[in-house]
Image 1 (cartoon, one colour):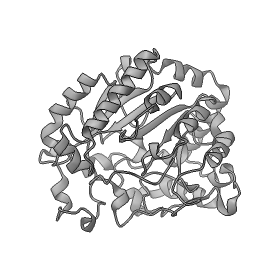
Image 2 (cartoon, rainbow, N blue to C red):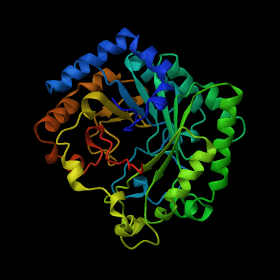
Image 3 (tube, helix red, strand yellow):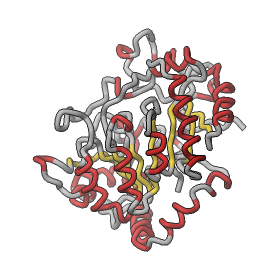
Image 4 (tube, rainbow, N blue to C red):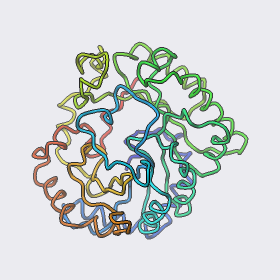
Amino acid sequence: MKIVRRSYTFSELYIFRKAALKILLNYRKVINFILVELSLFFRIKRNLGLPFNILIEPTGDCNYRCIKCEQFTDLYADDGLVSGKKDMPFENYRKIIDEIGGVLFTLRLWNYGEPLINNDLFLMIEYAKKKDIFVVVSSNLSLLEGDKPRKAVASGLDYLIVSCDGASEQTYKLCHGKDYFKRVINNIKALTEEKRKLRSELPFIELQFIVMKENEHEIRDISGIAKELGVNKMTHLKLQADRLSIDKLGRFSSVNELLPINKIFCYSSQERKRFNSCRIPWEETLIRYSGKVIPCCFDIGQFYAMGNLFLDGRYAGFRNIWNNQNYMSFRNQIAVNLEALPTCSCCEKRDNNSNDQISLA
């Protein structure tokens, strides 16, 4: 099992030893894992267990406008405001964790919003850690100011991905739409300093760089910055741009204008076709800020919505959705012919493969 589709060295994995041990010693988590894997192996549409990896979206709002973000595409859909904003209320989040947190291995707190916009983010992390869940957050980190670096470390956060697609102020602004390069670098420094002060190995910090034509020339520079900052991991990712909307890309007249010139940094359809099935509908799920349950983050249009946990102000119960007719039918379709599903047929991340990573060794 991979953490957020990444490969790791032994020294990197060693940092997670305490969290891993807590999971392995929890018999409920282990038994649930076995039940899920049996369901996957036999392609049982009624899952015998609950997902052991989930993604919960703290907010649907973002303070950035990144050129590669699918939130600004014609396909993207969400459910609008919840109590006047696009944040998941902590009480809603707590109900989900209370129901299924006892069997979870990992919790990813992000999707298409900036997690730090939700003022309850650190409270969410702390609550999940009480149930020995490995918690991962992906952020642009522009809002980690004031006392938030200390709160991030004190919360027990295990893993932090910092999205940084530029190694200079100019390129960063081109890619992210904000002139916050120096701010983000300073916030990373502040976070690593708090780790040192609190004598904490965590959170494990990964600097993520999605390679595009706009930043291709700074690949070596961003690796140097990562080394200077002392982050734990530097990851270069390929861009999947075929779903971006031309009319929302501003100065670009074609999606191809975003793709790197060096084709080793581009997706290959042959890589995707090597994975003719997908384990995600058995092992994982996505819960949006509104409470809508989606089988996978690749379904940005919510075409395969399985239900909503919080309709009419009442908690419907995750178990009631996990094996409802919609979910079972979807798993059956995946098992029979994944390519027949339009969204899944063009997915580059199927089966949680790591084909989006670029090895520069």
